[in-house]
Amino acid sequence: MLELKNLKLSYGTSQILNGVNFSVKRGDVVSIIGPSGTGKTTLLKCINYLVKPTSGTIDFDQIRMDYARPDKATIQAIRLRTAMVFQQFNVFKNMTVLQNVMDPLVVVQRKSQDEAREIALMELDRVGLSAKKDQYPAQLSGGQLQRTGIARALAVRPDVMLFDEPTSSLDPELVGEVLKVIKDVTSSGITSILVTHEMQFAKNISNRIVFMDAGVVAAEGSPSEMFDAPANPRLAQFLSTELETQ
Amino acid sequence: MNVSTMIPELLEALPLTLAIMFVALAAGFCLALLTTTFRVRRVLLISTLADLYVSYARSVPVVLQLFIAFYGLPVLVGAFGIEDFLSANLAAMVGLSLYHGGYLSEVMRPAYLAVDRGQHDAADSLGYTFQQKIARVVGPQAVHIALPGYGNSIIYLIHNVALIMYIGAADVMATAHLIMARDFNQYQFETYLLLAVFYSLLCLIAWMIIRFFENRASIYTLSNKPAKFSLTASV
Ligand SMILES: Nc1ncnc2c1ncn2[C@@H]1O[C@H](COP(=O)(O)OP(=O)(O)OP(=O)(O)O)[C@@H](O)[C@H]1O
Ligand SMILES: [Mg+2]
Image 1 (spheres, rainbow over the protein chains, first blue to last red):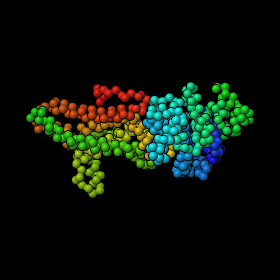
Image 2: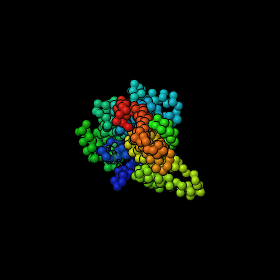
Image 3: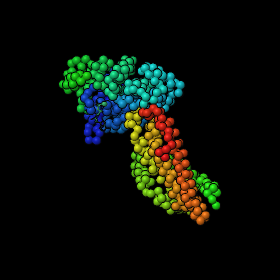
């Protein structure tokens, strides 16, 4: 349903993405792993055009765009069908938890307040935050902030969920509660792309693993192919250092 | 003539003084909004002009800006064939609006830039248009950041209103000087003291209004308690 071809991106003189090819089928849960700074976040942000690739194409069901010729309407169409969960949560600081989840429904989707509230309350219940609905972000823990972010993303009913290292800015004791919610979301059948350093978690929830290295997709396959018998030497090395630190 | 009869005379000049101030406040705000927009969303040429304007407003002494408005505006409107239409009061309004707008833009721009990049990303990713993003997310947060600076620029504006007598506008300062001259320079100290009280009161009111909004917005800052209300050492 989603295919990126030959994606290239550079910041100034440093080339970050060197021709990434990446695709996702409906219902897939794909985890992107790889060393720090290889462009995993950047790749994810290319999908909804939060960063601007210099070349490459995206095919998203019937939507198609050449990044060399970005088009506002197409970008908007893609954004309306995806939702992102951020490493830094990026919950709207001037709104309560409930307002955070409702606002996109009212402002972007033009739903009525009542309808938006109903959906928002349902999603907040799903992430276990009903009791915190009237709190402002400044009053919440990292885990609660991230669950707000997830509820906000789910509420817009995206075709694809984009998770960018959703647990890496959390205190260790808060990681569990967020992973539990993500597991619940991905097992509900929604197509998801997850950038993560939680190797065990990626192995458990994904049906495909993509290994990025030096701005390209260096290897991909099923979790067992990738984790149990890594053919790619760089991947094997990455996994051994990664598992050591965990 | 004594001090008590002087007060009503001074007060007669008050409405005009306040009118000039409020015009500068409102027009300056709109100007600052427009200027800031072009300074954060770069548009060829217009953005450079906006930068130039802000440097002018911030670096040229306000008295000089008032003289430039006073002598420059007739030339400008004269070019459109309009003559004898500018009064000192109108020039004061224009001069102060330009000053306040430029000054305020340099409060608004850093406040806008201080809003976390992630807030933009989140709004963009959800499909907010630029206007929606500003109205719903970035604007309210920037306003909160800008409020103390805005309070200061209002206070500077109030102070600088006292300068418009130099171009012959009939504000409270100018009126006070007329009264003193007429009354053989008696009660000079009292008159200036009265003006000082008048300006202090204006600033106090402005400060209290700003403080009210600061407290209202503080619900979503890191500290959950509203800022302590104290009248001293604030204006
Ligand atoms: N706005 C930017 N300007 C310049 N360089 C950037 C910018 N954003 C990211 N980079 C650089 O691009 C590279 C890729 O960044 P990216 O965040 O995509 O890596 P990542 O794979 O997500 O890493 P991590 O696992 O640490 O999150 C990094 O070297 C980073 O320093
Ligand atoms: Mg990253």
